Image 1 (tube, one colour):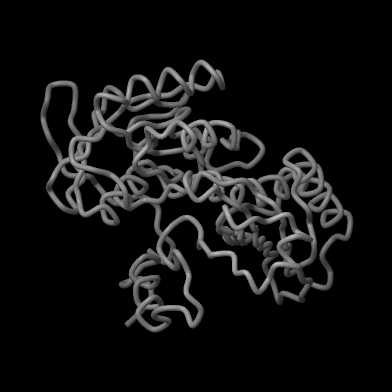
Image 2 (cartoon, one colour):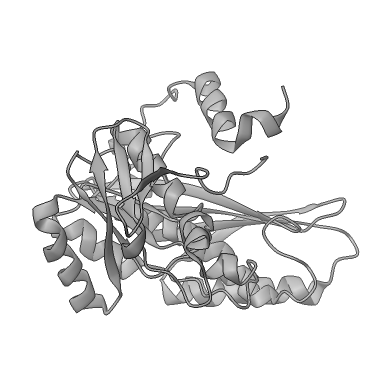
Length: 322
């Protein structure tokens, strides 16, 4: 079987079946925005050194960007690329209700690659890391036969009472989102033209509100985010086309399926959704929209147009290997 038939998410499922339960008990393994680890008493000296506490979970995530898949070499600012490579990991930590702490950075480059570009890349990483008080504590540099690759592993922490996952949505919940959608797709995923928002403050407000039932980010598109919440929550969803916040110069299709926005997609009980929306907007000045509803139909995510017509989604959003 070829990967093109299985797709990224089918491959992840197969890998999960092979790996099984981790040898050491994890609170949450493969299948969410981050892994979640219980902090053990036996590591108390390390905990003290890195300022973790038993009242918190440790979060771990990793993301990779590959030349020709995520960015073009020509015309790309490597400072911006460094910022984005770290920011997309921060977004994963944020979507779990957590805060980032330490990063490991790995690059793969051809021996003829520009040293100046790599310096710019690390300057972008350094400056964003400083902004969010993240320690860059190591990584790896390796040779790559052709394409440039950057991979970042990010650690974080979340208060046990504030941890959010994809699996908590309930039938009747409203679907809320921060920001606008479709901009990166309309800009043809040009890193210099598509603004990347890091929603750490908003995620913290959501987690501590006690009103949110599930959350993820929109890295693979709005529809894909909702599909993943539904899959983990054993539910379905309806997205209302006239309520989807669309970026300037983007179309509805791009907003639904584009990806790379890294906005927050989350759910809350219908009677609490407006209160949560108002809280986030008031305290962060970030646009929040209510654009859908969780329904009982497992795995069925559909779009409702302005005339009330219900249509199946065209795809589940961006997926590697397809």
